[in-house]
Amino acid sequence: MAKRHPAAPRIWLVTDARNDAALARAITRLPKGSGVIFRHYHLAEAERRARFAAMAQTARARRLPTVLAGDARRARAWGAAGAYGAPHALGPRTGGLRIAAAHSLRELAAAHRAGADAVLLSPVFATRSHPGAPVLGPVRLLLLAKHARAPVVALGGMTARRARRLPVHGWAAIDAFG
View 1 (cartoon, rainbow, N blue to C red):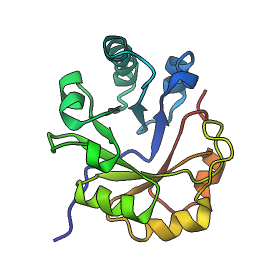
View 2: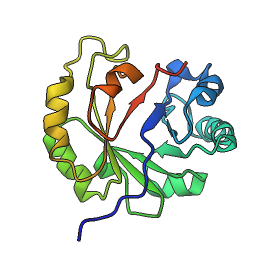
View 3: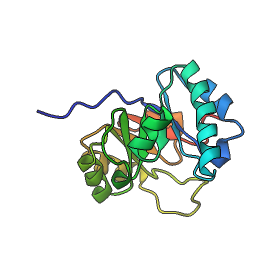
View 4: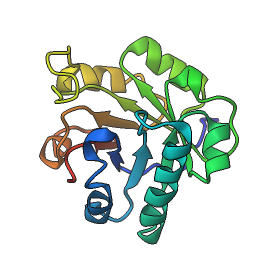
């Protein structure tokens, strides 16, 4: 019997230092049923936890799940709806969503072994965060997605217009909602 994945939102706002100042506004602009992946790696632990708590309160007011970049134990301790990260870093299942980041077929297989409920494949298009970095492009994204055993979410240079042309579960962005 195939594994059933918890319902993963189709649209995700991914946070970082660049969108922090407009984060509350971006969350209010998300469509119903979206989710937020809180990264904010640039903050010290105590500051990151406080920022997560404030952001999560805003998201909860709109009934949007918040996923913490980090292992599942920390995500649960912080009150997140799940964990996000490299498949090997998600840690043991503790309940909640498990969103894995992947950039290749090997990482996609690792996401499956880690029990990912959804996989963010990236970068699909050029991004401001990694100028000049190689991209998957739509064709390679779709070739990789055929091997996925969990819903695929496209990340990297994504906009609503680009997402409509990609037959995958959903899309995520850092800058598209600001």
